[in-house]
Length: 440
Length: 143
Image (cartoon, rainbow over all chains, first blue to last red; front, top):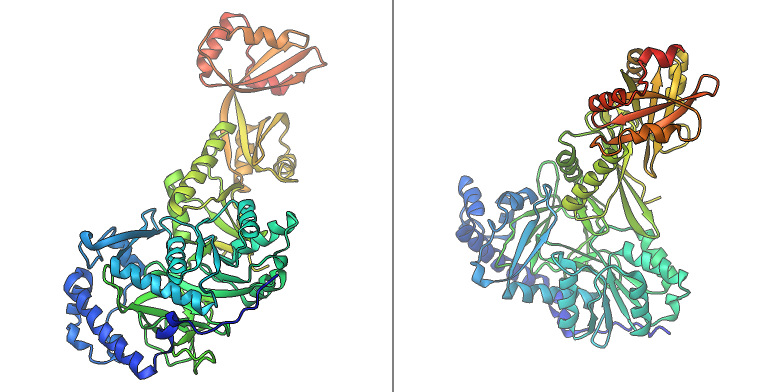
């Protein structure tokens, strides 16, 4: 039932194949432009450059980028909501937001030109994955404040494919649509797709018998063995894509048909790999933290944004012929951020929620598991003398308060378990905050 | 009039009641009454013991969260209607029973009811007015 996957060159991919010298010249011109824009229009960038005696004319070569200060996630939080905007609101056509660490989200903005660039990189992402006009794309990324849904949607339409904006959830309907609409491409988090695969099997639907042939998976780290499992169970080709809201959303990088590292669309997002401790730029091939600078973003330029994602450049040119540099799959993070069903979660957010609900911070532990391919998050909370009651109703109310506070701050359904005091194992007095059993 | 009841938090898992019971046994503390309130998620073990202060310190030293609450013990004849008579005393009042439990006493002629009231003082006054025997703490240990 699967059509052959002939991946022919698509004109939309032309920027992926630009000769390296021309690519570098374009990057430098765009870098100078974006640094000037950030310095002129964003107080934080200007102040930090001034403190170091830097001006936009300090950027004479791409290597000069390393002189500029980093931008970190807390800068977005500290300037909430609009403090890093470089465009007046009249020019901003879209706002998105992702979860922050204190219940306040991080806000990102796009001008019309930014949305066009975002669309173009998502078009190139799909092309990288061998998707083309005539494909029927089931977009199961969440629509809404999360950038995944609309990012993939615009890319799919920009490619000229047929897009089904089904969003996440309602798995039985997903499977019905996949079968009845003749879907050829699915976009989702890899864990949600695995969940769909399991459910399809329960419903007696064999994905190998359906026309679906490609999965465009991102928004969370996953492994090579998970890819093998998906591909073996369904007969599709599963591609890894990369992106983050602070930079644009999905569309920062994508695997090509070689499935050997992710090409970064570096004509728009300039990559560096730095030592997460010292911030020094590392030689090619060495593992470190990915730092990205948006080269064409207008509403919200990011200069040397610390992604906290740990990876390395893959030396050499890809067999596909693209000149874009490749990074290895994201293996881990340099901070304690967890990605649960595509949602970013910091243990500090869990603490903030517990503090809000109880008034004091109890001992707690986060336990992550995977059931039917779906991430499950349990928060175990020790009952303290302050909150304990001899009345069932009072403890039920406490449980509800904790669940609601976590739901509110994380934007994620969490199972709360009240446990006996001292039952969470401590080592040297400190409890291990996160037990991740998802890989088991 | 008021009797000290100890409440302990217990996870709803096998074996979680055994720990505190063993601990009290080792210290020679006698359990006079016990009830377990359980939900799907957790349980609350409520006990009345011969030496509440000692039991509390033993349990807390072992890491349990213990809450001491004042409850009332009422003696009723162990026959049909015994409980209804006591409950009838509160009919038409604003006194609310948070929870209660009962255990037989003596050689089966009497039962003791343990009440947790939202307002124990008002409850004592009402029970006395109605001529119901509210037990002193010593009475349920020593008889």
